[in-house]
Image (cartoon, rainbow, N blue to C red; front, side, top):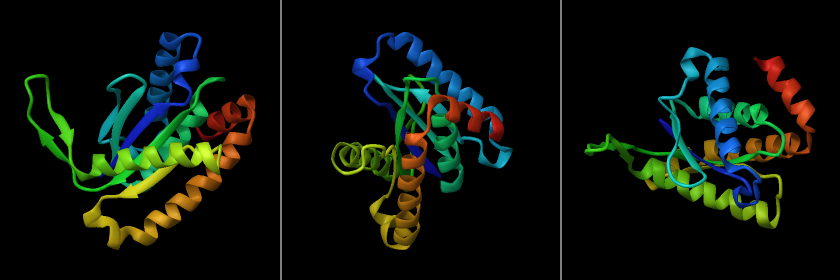
Length: 174
């Protein structure tokens, strides 16, 4: 399973955070309708705290496809960054429902912090990063490197598109 943490880019600068929340959740629903059955989220994106959402996908391929489609489905003025984590996940029973925890989530957290850092420094259009938990790091090193190279390239392309082009591409894919 691939865990995904998403957060809103420049959320503190949004004029209407409530409308943004609804638009993002609408984009998540739209993407769930587009994805083929084998790529549907194991754990659909859900708001957790502040400007953050979490979800999980069956494969890295599905997570990368979903994160791209979400970015394409977002309305003008909204963008998300994504941290994807490869690693084990444990469900912890709680009185408020099941909590998901473990190295997969910690890797996703490290990935989103890393992509935020590289976007500030050397790749302003970077929005997606993949990290593997320690127990998967050696075996997944090549896969992670390839995924990150592809993510940086796609983020650069999508980041340069106009809102209209993003919407047209999303519609064409759908």
